[in-house]
View 1 (cartoon, rainbow, N blue to C red):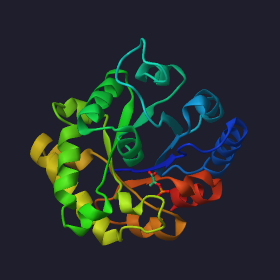
View 2 (view 1 turned 135 degrees about the vertical axis):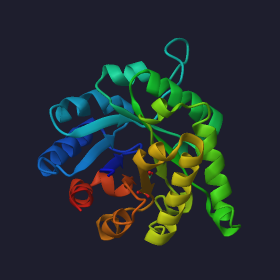
View 3 (view 1 turned 90 degrees about the vertical axis):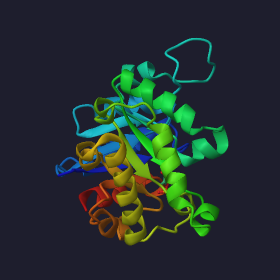
View 4 (view 1 turned 45 degrees about the vertical axis):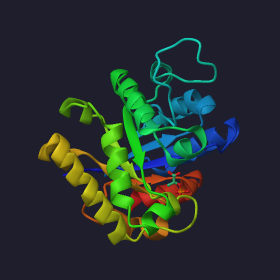
Length: 249
Ligand code: PEP
């Protein structure tokens, strides 16, 4: 049985004071949420502070991105070891905004995922089609390329650290959500890919999150679908009450 994971991607929002306030409110409101796994992904400059607020809680902290090299002359980048050193347990890889604005590819996601796992982080690989691709009926082809490209060369053991997030790009920040049936169908497709590539055990144990305008009003219906194992939440994760409501089901 897969436990639900509810994860909040704060994106490029909050200043230091707001990040600490939000983390403190989540700590208070989620103290008793024992039936789900929880994670937040604050902006890089606030990771250490948020880790400090959330230490000794069940809410894990992760980076929104990383660079695959361990260190060196890569101005502006953050390594996996740096994330670990401030207390991060997780990291997002290949969010659609990184693919769209920062040129991330399946190959660069693959390098990032490898670096994250080697450093002991548990990455969330984000995949999803854009509207034109869905309109053309190409969503499964697109997601298949992203999943298999991102996980190229991975072992069954590596997969123990990986979570996948299906985030249809047309549903991110738009208020438009995939229906539970649409999302579950894609999650089933992804699980089938994992089964073919890594075997049934990996397919059955890997969590596949849904992301795209998830909010308290629709989270229950989405999370009760059999192949949806939680959510990656953007906008609603910036409001402690909303994120807590989603997490508490
Ligand atoms: C996201 O950015 O991962 C996301 C799902 O955003 P939103 O919830 O705002 O659609």
